[in-house]
Length: 275
Image 1: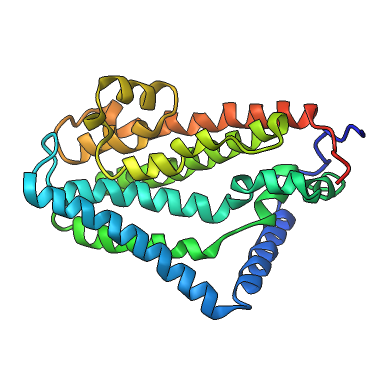
Image 2: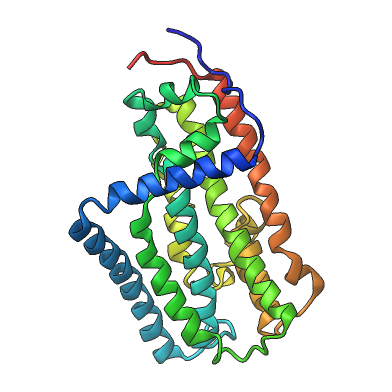
């Protein structure tokens, strides 16, 4: 077994790296568009799954009217933020979600001998543009919720909403990197991570506080899903409009640091299977 657990040399983000990433993105898009019928059917399927999930939220809210003081448009805003963040991360960080396959078929070994950072290369190896179906559904929900949720869309509130989405995409991306980082040690993917990625998106249909104080603390201090979803939502809806609640998505971005550290540790321990 040959130890190839060192990161490939490469400069940090440069104009050349941005151009290369753009080219890799176009290659992924063109390859998926070779079978247009399949691409559009998968995209429609992603939209349909998200729509069905939202239909369940709508039916529940029609029966109970509010959930912990949140109305249907406010819950819709909450879900749209989570779905937008998850869709973006799943589209552009798909390589980490399928990383066990890359290790198993030797594709990752080829990345190690290329003069670019390994994270950059894994990002470029796999993107899934059919996830735009979920993104379209999220945009439709935002279009419904924004004028009806009782929020006055001042520049501060618009900035808070944008920060929620950006931070959410970063947190979901970090979870996918953690999933890939564990794969260095297990070879096979750990399915329990889906509880936090797909499960986080599914349970993010509602404010996380409805699942109990214990779950809320876990999603605040361990896996910071609540930092970009629940707390800024309290500020936007005027329930607890504090500086902390508005800025809560910023510390959530720090979750990328332990995710990157785990990736680096796993990379140093990785030994090629020779596939």
